[in-house]
Length: 358
Length: 263
Ligand SMILES: Nc1ncnc2c1ncn2[C@@H]1O[C@H](COP(=O)(O)OP(=O)(O)O)[C@@H](O)[C@H]1O
Ligand SMILES: [Mg+2]
Image (cartoon, rainbow over all chains, first blue to last red; front, side, top):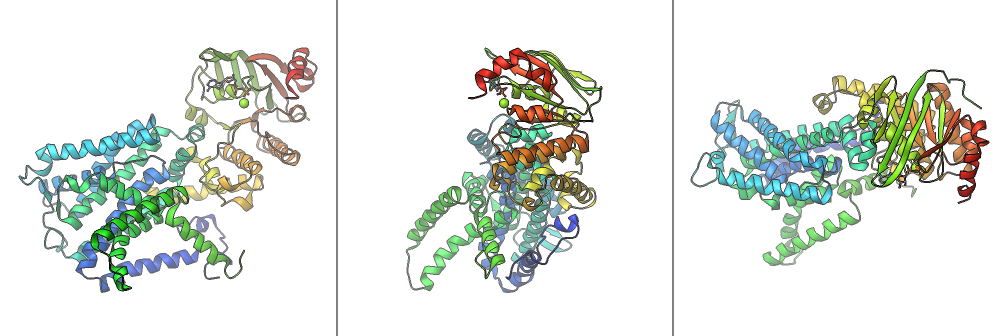
């Protein structure tokens, strides 16, 4: 009886429509926020920030973006990496062309570039679906990276072919560049994640979210209700690409520091796709859970067996990791398409009934 | 048991509609009208073209010939969302709910066209977005009360039994507060009790909300009970048009039905 709705009667629709209508959920979110804003910065060291938590949060933003498109609007995409690249390259161009522009604003502007390109690549979705759409987004993935590689203008004709985060500060605090502290970058990435996750949650529970799901579940009926398929799908492509674009900008400017297009290749697209499959299609919280799970699993596999006295060679551990990923993805695709988010919900339902079996 | 709301005003006028798919002639030269406030039935054996007729009315199929006048506006072709904006809602022969969404969300989706707040307000869930959500929730709740589906408000519709799904689908159409409601076999596959309930809802919608209804139904007794006038189709042709009593005694209708009623 730890977790239940009993006794919590909503007297207004407004209360019932709250973002977290159940009080225990509100507590859960509050605790998560305290942990991420206070506890983690207090305990984490440079290694944890750089190797685990910062990338986890960035992946989570990209996963929310992809989940909007694939999980909510039902449009499969393998172009996540490319849309992240657009955000990163746009940030690079903008912040080198306008060095005085606030870098945080540049991140958001870069997301808008990505959204624009997302709309263009979303147009075929009116005609093609499923597998064929996936192939079309794959074409976007290869074309965009090829373009960024080929045209020197995108990386300011830098002979090394890389883009590098220049030092930029906001209110006297270094946000990007070699001298930006891990903890600063952590707070930047965390703030983006919190704001973006809340905004996404708000959008998916309102009119736009419902029209995405309507198109996903039964496009003919949606059309007859008056939902315009093209407009609705393009909105999903735009918002999804916006999220991915900002994630891509953070990926280079708050994490890697410098990169070539390889950092955004098809493996990155798949990685984000796996995160939403494992975390749960059509769930914002699931996107975060999936990102956490897939980021933490390799670390767990390298650290846990030695702790209980089992030595695994590192190449074997790598193989093991891939096998476990494969099995999990097949499991979630076939058995539980709603992923970890759904399993978490089942646990909550059980807790709600506890200690009575039904 | 004809309805009291029927007026002389013609809400929908269908003239000389012909529709074919490749070589198959689904409808040939169909004309009839629907008066404001009436319950109009379309009957006929399987494959007669009944569903195709509804699809023409709400712009999903584009007939090769003929024209449709709705609320005084004549058109040959129409986009589906335009039809929705003009006040036409419908249910489907094979349930077409949004299976991943809850009952409430399905019904709220029926109000989508009436909601306007832009994406920024929605992302913040403030101002117009918040107000709008509450306002339309009230309408959705009235529909839920009306159809007595309060207990399944938050249940994903995919998990509901067939009869309830049909009811939710009616709710989704009602949420749009349509002027013309098209129901494609709303009672198909239901048991006797469920049929009675559905009949009652249809009559109540017509009576209390004044909604004009065009309904396709196989069960002759139901049709005779609740409709004001009946169109009979057979192989895409129009066999008869009139009050249930007139249609019942029409020799063509009797012939057509003798062959198929006991399929
Ligand atoms: N989309 C379509 N494509 C091809 N043929 C169709 C289509 N829709 C209906 N038909 C044909 O039109 C005829 C009438 O079908 P329909 O309107 O569904 O009949 P009813 O609803 O009266 O059973 C049938 O012969 C059917 O095969
Ligand atoms: Mg039919």
